[in-house]
Amino acid sequence: MEKIPRYGARIFNEAKDSLTEAAETLRLLGYAVVDSGLSPEELAKLAERFEAVRAADAVGPLADLRRRVSESDLLRCPLAQDPAFLALAGNPRILALCEGLIGPGFILNQQNGIVNPAGAEHYSQSPFHRDLPYQHFVSTRPLALNALFCLDPFTEENGATWVIPASHKEEAFPSEPVLRAQRRQIAAPAGSFLVLDCMVWHGGGQNRTARDRRAVNHVYTIAMMRQQIDLPAFLGEGFTQDPTLRQLLGFGHPQPRSAQEYLSMQAAKRGV
Image 1: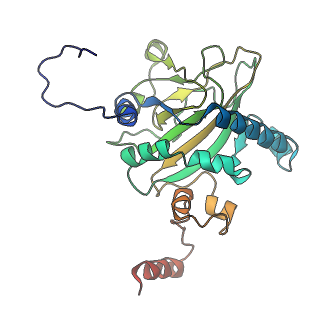
Image 2: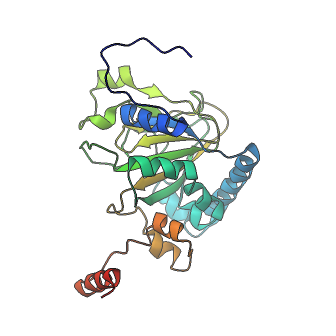
Image 3: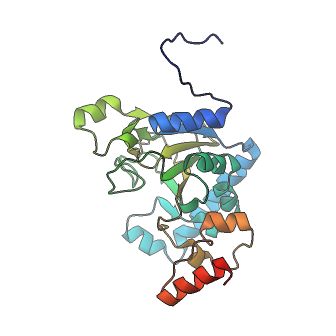
């Protein structure tokens, strides 16, 4: 392919592969679409398991509480119910992207199944928001990434996510005219991840079709950020002994509850 003409440039980025291209796009615009590498058969099985978790949550002990807090379109931490979602959270392409952009030692802050209901004017993710809500700052590199897995295709008709490009570089929420002029609705195929810098303003679109649009959201953060749900406490010490998964789930970063616990943990790290 012939290069687009340019002059006066002395420093260049190089897109060695699709992941480095996605990383560059994320740094520039705050979002990118990344193929998960899952086969159509794997995607179909994952959709079946999503529906199984959804059905169980609809009649489980928390069903009434979920309705009372308007979370009927959210499935909190499906990896606790089905190992297929633990594998999804550990997708090697997404972990490699996190490693390059956030740096080593990042953790999974949260995983949630999201349903954009058929024919609904609004749902819980409709309003524009950041995935580090109520925060107004910029940083030289991402502190957190959102990897939204598309179980179904994201289209304009079924409420694909709206994004304000490059808004992770501005502290304030855009003015109404700029918001209306600059927002973009991002289409993405089933089986891909829509990856966002968590400081990019975004929101779900209106699903004007007769079918729910389903996704699984993941937020990966630097380890010093508190998890949405304390996963080590929720999952239990015996959940996994795999060292990579334990690091990802936050088992390597226990929160000391006293000065004695803190000092004991430091002594154990240093072998003294």
